[in-house]
Length: 305
Ligand SMILES: [Zn+2]
Ligand SMILES: [Zn+2]
Image 1 (cartoon, helix red, strand yellow):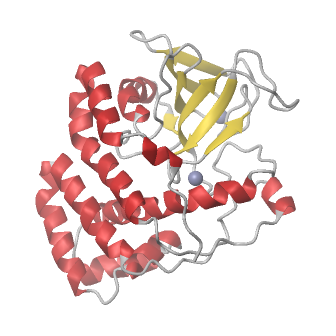
Image 2 (image 1 turned 60 degrees about the horizontal axis):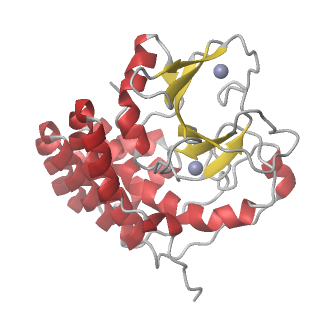
């Protein structure tokens, strides 16, 4: 068996990060209370998957480099007992953070014990099989949105686990898209970092733009002056709204497709933000952008109002 290396991101303590950010952003306390338990449970789940075995698809550079994410053709992997355990973990975290959902979540965790294989739920979500999902909801007689929410949150740690290995496979291949090269999801945050060696295509003045996948947590470099959603390079339509409190935080908007994403300029920061947590501290920017009728590139539990 291949020994799995400890995941480097886990070295940073999510709980400590959440507490520190909550202290820094007292106005967003309710956001941290609602979603903090979920973020922590996600991390716990990722760690529990250290010994989970999966087989990544073969890499085919020409297809990938045309914009087909690495895992897009992957067959649903065998999740074993892990999914069921993670589902319970997520359900508890969601009920803890959002007490209004306690009864609905309780009903789901009770009914889910009656289905033959909870991994069918994971497969229906993986395959985007809406008929399969509707059937499951009918069989279980539960709230569909909440079931899909818990089910999706329970699948995410598997994506994060695969990302650790997949990132090494795609390392040498070229990716120019605004969605994740591994799983195809749009980013929940972008980080501006100091320029190092720049290649001609991505070259930019004033730092490099890195995108963080809202699903698997992969980070990839993206062109600075292009909309990740519609790929417009019309500079008159690519603007940003800066945070009034902190100059390093902003929301980038595109007036061509009306999408937005939040950004932290990390170049002058003494401590690099943890992208698993940082979006929670930028919800005031989500609100501002959505008030102006922009849509988030990635829907996260905390930016759907
Ligand atoms: Zn991803
Ligand atoms: Zn756009």
